[in-house]
Image 1 (cartoon, rainbow, N blue to C red):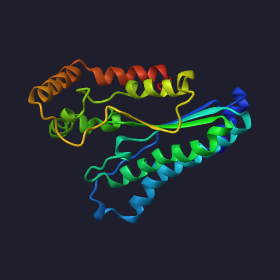
Image 2: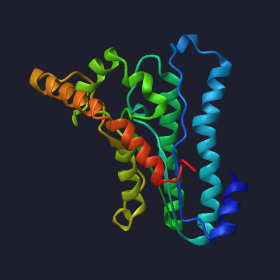
Image 3: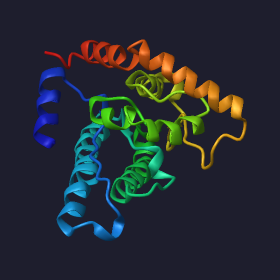
Image 4: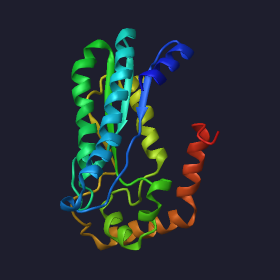
Length: 219
């Protein structure tokens, strides 16, 4: 991480922002998790985030300014069966923002985290095409739809803007998954109908491709 960040500074002259979206998941009962599986996900989700944050923060402190935004998860604050390691590591990412912010805020470096709900990406295709998953989780999301990368990007942009100068530390939870089902049947049916329209329109695929293009990820 330090070497790559040094390259950025050498090329651009400074390091003003760091946005990290690092994450792998493992769906498995907690008692069945092997030691190697634990260490692998902790290294990916938590260690990598910490080391990159530390490297970036060292440069930002030298400059007297900088902003760091890490992508955590709604599972940083709630638990779901068979997602224990992911939830634990993302809780660490969320609290990491607070720990860094307390020390770095007075030095001009703001650190925050974002906790999205389920977001449509190529890595979540299996969930978003599973009728049982949709039926269980969609009615719990007040917005009536799952998330897209653009939903996350909008919050990132806000946290990097002057409008967020006094916001630190925090975890922004996007379309938070409620703890229980929607009691109003009409609301649940409307949410499911909205999702079907959204899916049929190719919304997820087009949004993802557009975002990749704008960020230059297709090069």
